[in-house]
Image (cartoon, rainbow, N blue to C red; front, side):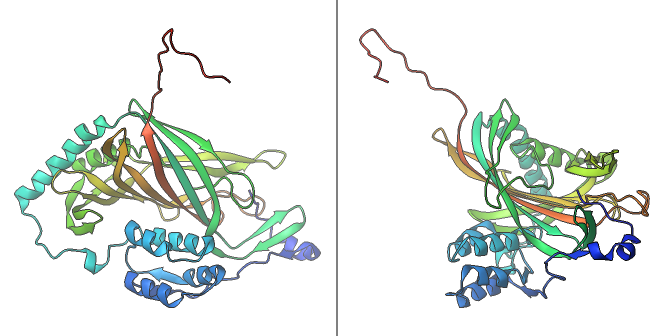
Length: 386
């Protein structure tokens, strides 16, 4: 962790001041629709991977880029850098409404139909999810972070870091075991190059508990019709919900904030874990209540240690043991936090350090049943040679 130095050092130790080589301010961005993005990528055919990645970093979407379109467009890109830039672009659009072309013009359901849909959602969460078998899946997480502008006292002196926008910082791999309705995550971090452990929000419960919590809280809060939406396999219904803090069972978890320093200067890291009011959307199959997309936006104090947090979960059918089950396919978590507490001329009470943004994109795959295979050998069987 970096510590902000007293300003007086800037005058008495000017010879120690070093300026980090970084972008001083974010480049101007261009707001485009999903169709315009596709046209831009078509017109950019023949560009190098690095040049196209730089071009994508100057674009902001005005509507959501869905997973199907992301996969299709990613397949046309020349390399890893441009694909990572496209993933980041899509992830930043995850909380936006879909393009108008993906919103069917069907009339909103009446009160009776809306009530029946709610019954189907509750039935799905209480019954269907409990039928999910014990399983093992892989989870690949791509991490992005920005870098706030700050001055840092380091071994070589005061280093001035200029702002750097969200960019790729690492990739981690984990095996997730879901057994007896409990999740166990075995983290495995790839070493070497610029791939390593990534930070950001701590998420869990993707295999059912998070859905149970949100639906139960939403029914105690406010839930209302939002719109129809075109999904990958047909028309989806979308409800909007909001939950007050005293009705909420949702907690924002992040590791870690700095709570001070010991005598040697080592930071005291403290996990952030707070209950929060929140709101979001539930997109589901109107014929049976199957939830296929869930968004959560925490309502946090603007000046708090964590000021912004949100999660998007996408679900899809996977074949496990010869049968299709609806399982997590992808999650996007966004968090903005003050990760550093300075000392010296600044007090903990009135300064929290610069705000830093974390964005993680997790893809779930390679589903298989959890269990073991047994082979019975008779007297006529012989063991294979070693």
